[in-house]
Image 1: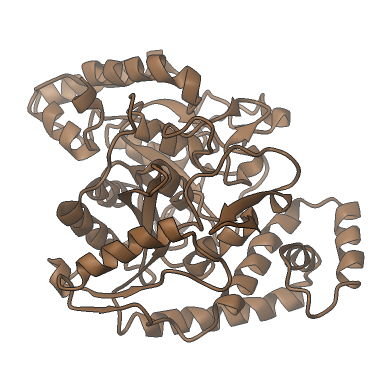
Image 2: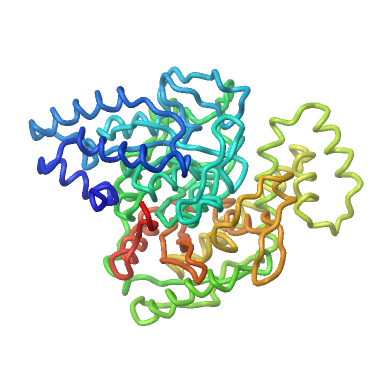
Length: 483
């Protein structure tokens, strides 16, 4: 049974289609894993098990007739707590929203349910999805299954932990600051941040909000790269009203083998130093790829500095949060921004300026962002993918004291702000690029490392194809011990 619960979703779908087991039996196997391990990990925080068994029974009837809805018909799944699931609370980890009961499913959940996936629960997040840890006053703290004293990442931390422990086979997350990518890296699973607005975001918002924030996306997590590709095909496409006239039609990846790929690799950055144990894993991958790919470079980069990239990303990222500031908080930010020196490029200074940003100044930053988007596009004329870290280190120990920018991690023996790692989130994210995270095995400290695979806008299938080939050539997901 342990082998069964850790199989990729597509393999499980084949077993269900062949009637080697029933959807109800598979759901029970996942629920057994949930019952055995969730108390310690605290990944799944909302459940509706009777509804799941009803859906599994319907899947079994379809499968018995030989009429599966999709390759994942009957496969169990969970979803990030911040996505609406009709009849259950959507709190974003905020006690004030404990009674916010969804009346309809988020588009991504509805689309996967229409494909026959069996949703039985939702997974934990940080308050307002605003941390690389997953803890809140509603549901408590989620632990990393590789080391319970460490974070599973955030904000889709419960999602990655549920996958890594075999509690579910499919997950849905969101990502504005590596919230899919970072937990995939910390927990040793796969995650894909799609091109901006490729996947409908409808049904992922606090009450009263209907507009989609800048940068943020919805996307899949799984235990296999091929699963990500299949899930994206089911999830992609705009919601209403855009969906009445627009469809998603991604270009197919022309590459069939690694030999068809032109690969650039970035190991480190002056904007965010990367721990040697993470660099070593990506360096080893690069050396192994040397004779397997068409072209490989450790020096090729797009035509702008890392420092400018990071400043633009943080400005745009923090500007999205200004919407929720009270009038008093906004006035305070405006007053404080006037006291900052022009040379102050600290995170707090960038955040304060972003909170106080006028629309005129936002448009200027947005213009420069779009210039960098074109430079990225030009870069990908010569390179198919760029490989880089997802974070500065492996999963760090729980630290819930103070604000995020007041906490620290150790990188190469030095104490640095946890916020510095956001460079690797924004390197592609601030410019709407797709990024796939694929596991590379364990670092010297025994914790997972993932590589971030970046490619040009709407070439999502190219990044996923490269992840599939890495999985085939070098191996992929490995369950944490004890599960």
